[in-house]
Image (tube, rainbow, N blue to C red; front, side, top):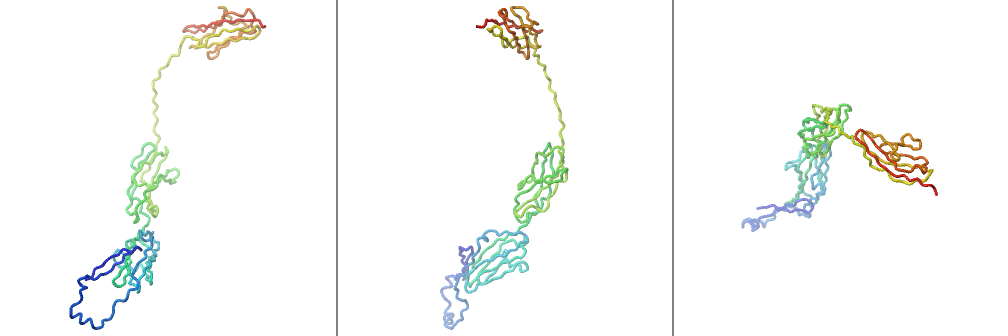
Length: 354
């Protein structure tokens, strides 16, 4: 009785050895022993080198090709005398109309001129020498661009935003999708601009659309080969309308700023020298604007050419031109309006020069 033992080879291949059961090793019956004395021709050749497959490192993971690409795999092996080499595709014999194989003394070549998606699958190389067999497995994946998403729908438009939904493509191109690319175009320019790329969900809200424009949207699917060749476009345009502006006038309470005169900066006493012009300053606040009256020793000096009185933005000034000994005394600034009056005083001393 025979059994198969599989040994994992460091080159990525597997060696299978058929063993003889111990019950069969006790020897043949007596009659057979007598017959064994007669010469029997040797049927199995002497194995000089065990079969082994040297699988390239790049083929130890899924080998990916695009539709239309050429597949040309060279797999080295060993074994003496020359072993028996066979290929299978998903456990079945190769389709000779699509795949060709050339077996040499130390390598085997698998060739597909123009790969198609039907060529994807698990290919197994077997190198057999007598009871010994080495095998290696290669996974081939043939991919192409995905089909377009089945549809895209404009769900809602509000303000400067538009919400979209779409459905995944029926055909992913035999590869996982990397996401979706969404584009927009306004009717004025007709140019398409990308809103987002490699987006994984099937709904999105586009913001910051220009008021007064109308927009169409389209979406592409993308995989390792690139974007889908076509893209569905929204059946309806998103019209971004200008919102009507409503002005609400709130009630305004007029504040009364009227107040009686009040001096915020009083007059300051000063000493001057005969013949040198002197100025007096004070500040007053009042509403309505007050009338300013200057007095010297309680006598009105308005209109006197020796004095020059000014008032601007609440600052009151009095210039005494070339004062003499008789110009000293008590000076008063009085402010008067309909709500009241106020006054400030100061003393001015005039001294003769030394």
